[in-house]
Amino acid sequence: VAFSPDGKRVVSGSHESLVKIWHAETGGEVCNPRGHSRAVWAIGFSPDGTRAVSGSADNLVKIWDVETGAEILSLGGHDGEGLCLCTVDEDGALEEDDNGEPILHPGCPVTGHSGAVRQVEFSDDGTQVISSDEDTVLVWDVASGRLVRQLEGSEFALVEGLSDEHKRGRHILTARGDTLLI
Image (cartoon, rainbow, N blue to C red; front, side):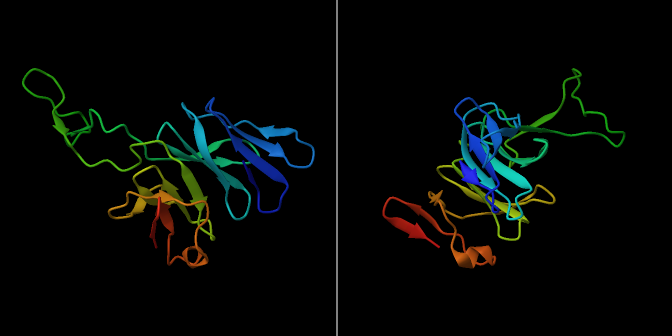
């Protein structure tokens, strides 16, 4: 669970793949965003409190409107299996082989988490979301939905808080066991 910056809303995630936004004062439900297919492990609010972010065992990070529950953005996520790229001709039709089957190009790079998302957090200005699974820390641009950075050699999980320096765009603090990476 997490409180909105103004303390008026609470967002929660559950093992039943649910995200819920509540009135902090009354305990009444504001909305029930739907879109994850597995347990929701990570929850947070944007700095202005208008958006919530969630991370799930479905390998996805989702951004929600806190008043309506509408999904604003879905970021990444794949299982690493069966990934292929299909090509199209100049008319937009799938290119096919002599048997009429689509031409597939296996092993193309895919962005996103390949494991359950365990931590999510907005940057202080709300323009980026930082997310992590057990092996990878990713930085996403909220406006475009593009992956802008992946921490190299990161067998680290994002810690609960980010350093103040990160909030000014300079550092991300990660840790696992007795190892710390800044």
